[in-house]
Image (cartoon, rainbow, N blue to C red; front, side, top):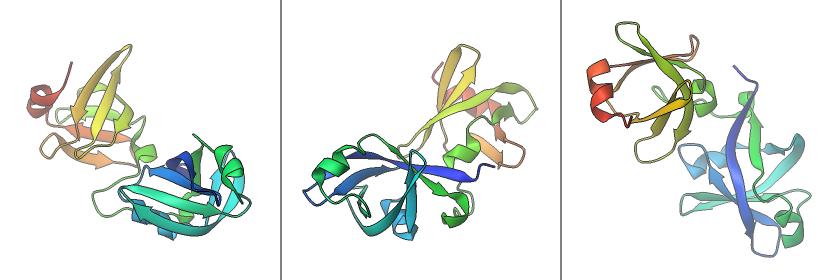
Length: 166
């Protein structure tokens, strides 16, 4: 497992005092309250304030005193150290831990690898089969088992082919 996690992306400055609006890659924007420091392009920033609303987090960072400084952070990914991130709930996983996992049927047939996860009410997984991509929802009954340690996701073959977008 990697020592860092990408937990969000800075969308834009918010206001004139250097606050930034963040799109979280976590289950909830409230998760950002746990972070005391973040990293942007390898540079550490101390988190001074966190507020949430509308599914976004708004961060005040040390060294970002005004809108002009915040503008320079637009579209930067927010990285945290894994040991400082909250543990996911049972049955939940960090996307970075799942990417690259093999996707297998219950019979052991390799369908491809997990290339991307699009967050939605039910996450949409992108399975890569060489140059071809297959989209499928991570819905109950489709995914039957996940092993982060083995980098393996098991799916019900019948259900998978009912919902997959080929």
